[in-house]
Length: 298
Image (cartoon, rainbow, N blue to C red; front, side, top):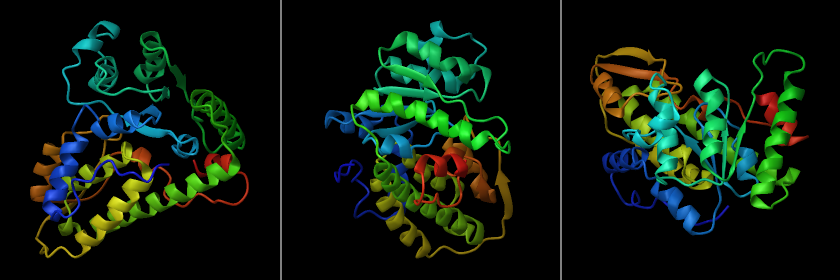
């Protein structure tokens, strides 16, 4: 991956200013940092919200981007979907049709009926490959790991065909190490929210972790590592608030304004927002077969 940084406006700013800038970028449906990556000659793999092993795209030098809908009216996609479908499906396709984001490969998975058919509908509208990753419905089955490893290998072949790069085991191991660091930093953020929730609200937390869905991973890791130190040093005082867990936003996320309202009266100490980034809590081993390790981790 490149050493270039695509989100630099936060440097030298106060923590409150960083939260504001992160939210602005997270809510921008035009993905300016992704556009800058493509302008520099980079390739982009978009994957529908929930879970995708981004390490396999990273190992090929692609930028993995979580496609999670956007604050658009969805008019371009209306003719491609039934009116009863949820807005995350419509607005995800909408930002691609309007070229707010341009991809080189798209991956979805059958988490619901709409997502199951998203790949086929997406594929009718773009020349690049659109694929479905079938995650095991019963991960406790003794065949689940072998099955998922084969699924990952199938997707890897599409990635290699798109980028023209052969992915080696060393490439995968290096990517796993980068993502292991990111997993630790996200755990640290949520530890702060559980132990000292007055230091950061759920709205600001979501603004930060949303950036992990489209910034190059090395850049995001450096960013979050710096911001975590600033959060720990924040001179905020504990208040008498109820501790709550926010659930149900694992796919179509609530507006940040809603979380801001909730955070004014409660400490949201945990949630399932952007859960795909935190689906694997522990480090993935780097010894042995990396595909087996990723499949086992799931």
